[in-house]
Image (cartoon, rainbow, N blue to C red):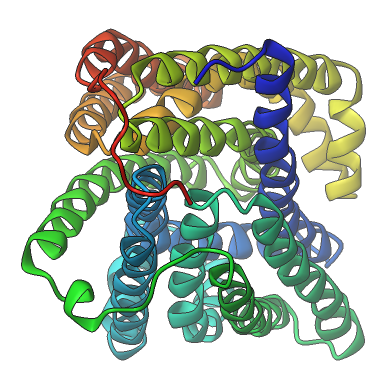
Length: 448
């Protein structure tokens, strides 16, 4: 594939632009949740939503394979011109995600007991967080189905479908947030009900968009292909590796939140605010991660090593430039963003003390996000698993040493080292990934 630089830039932004918009809307939804409860009297409401959200992040991030694995397998099927497998690559994770979501609802009581025992929240925060969990757990089947839908849309390079799906869900969530919390005085449970309604609406919209998209992709649904043992084994292997990788990631974030909670309600609230700000930019940068994964996966399916290299180079250049711009934005306007999220004077003052960690966050985090996307598209999930395990061990060791010495600054420094370790370890493995891509003529299957 010999394509001009201008064409490559357009190709990257045609994918990255809509995904960035849709991705950044996800933490913005979390920021709206935080902002709504941030205007209730007392920091315990922010802390309750922060812990509740972290519990679901742990549960859902452990199921991130439904999105990440789906993207890589779908992109490779698309690059190989296999329309039947493109369909099966959606059907398998949809069935799996819905089943896992129903199991979460059935097991909600033991999940609650295990999850909240780990955080050690104060007496004011704990019952509010549990009430939030008891409502939002009912969105689990839809939330996990949406993971599969989003991963598939990214894999078939339908970035606008992802954007429509996410923006619609987030608009519904934001509107219901204000109506249920301030209009009907539901408190933190109003925030949870808003999420439930938004997720099920999103699933319905996503399935409708799938039907429209498949009209343009030759092929049929085949039940025999959906249940082929070798394809299921490949999916389970990828899912196992990504599950273990994500378990390490979410475990590290849970430790981060738990250590912050032990610093008091004010520190817990401030860390929640700052992490929301960091996540907004992270999701923005993750648009390039998805783009790199899609382009790399499609190029691998087409057996084109040169295109793999070009996809990484062009996407990486744009990602670094956007990361630098995001750091400049937070350097000048970070304090104003904090003030938008909360009007609690103590939280505003304390947040400014730790704001430099967020200012530099995009620059040190972009590399791990980009490389994650590349390895996802290549379905090199064992490498992702192993580097995540290493990074988590480094984080725990750093937190054990730095938090007693530097307090909350030590916690943020440990997170910085965690991200740096992820990026460095994947970068070391990248040349081997590139060399493994066949560099022969593309398959004779019809290009979709």
